Image 1 (cartoon, rainbow, N blue to C red):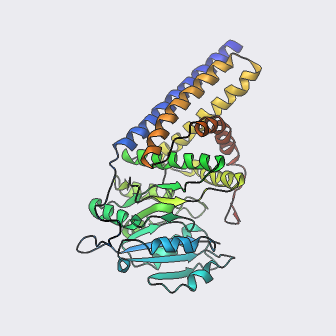
Image 2 (tube, helix red, strand yellow; image 1 turned 135 degrees about the vertical axis):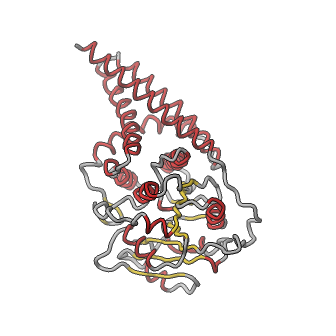
Image 3 (cartoon, rainbow, N blue to C red; image 1 turned 120 degrees about the vertical axis):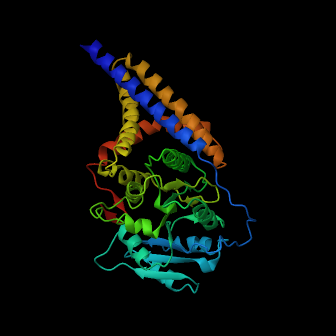
Length: 384
């Protein structure tokens, strides 16, 4: 009986390992085949794109962002893209700090401040309200705790003018920071943004970030915006991407560009990371697209099986073989993927950080995957 149980466990683990290797190789190939986009102009020279340049509305949902919003607005007003061709709309989502006061006191052009009504709350409502008050043809969303280089907006609009996609997904990575905890988060975020790119190459998108997302106003309206998603507190980015993909097949592009990259801050505490990952994981079985669910399940199973085989090795040494083999297989394919992507973003590969995180990740993914369906998360002072 024990022999048959162990044989089944071995077989299951090898199948899951094989599926994971194929999955990561699939995304790595997609990443490598996606052509890097570059705009040809001096970095300090303002440009005008096309005879009839696209008018852009940057929607900025904000809740309790008093400490961050000035830095972001400073980045936006240093853009090489002509100031006359874009507007910034800050949507205050019932902040309890001085966010609105800080924005209101700024005497700068093309900046609007609107507030959600008492009946409205949450990021989806903030984005919808911002779009309703906007005048741009191209909508771009970002977050108040982000920063970007001066060619960010030019890169996105240039790419849009050339390719005319309905939606553009662009990179979001963490700012470089010292320390082990920040390093693990940075490593994971870079892997996620590369996965978003790889999946979009095959028109099977699974990830994007509202911190760096652009789409046509008409596409948002045609997809009925966030209609039907009111019961879900999260998913303003991925759910919208999947709705637009269903409405406009093969009309979503990934902008692989260092200049189009947005930088965000790492969480300072483990509780913040866990809460964010629970928020992400809680959406898994709400997706209608089977490929999104299958990817999430595959990642969960490879990590949980590694963890389980490691625990069983303490009871029976024969499980140690499957533990070390599966861990080694995952280690190799993750290394290949991460090393390539880190090079693109000019980040150094840290062997010690990679090895330690590879050992921690099975515990972390299994824990988040198991608790997210049953325990609420807290985000911006609100519980799910």
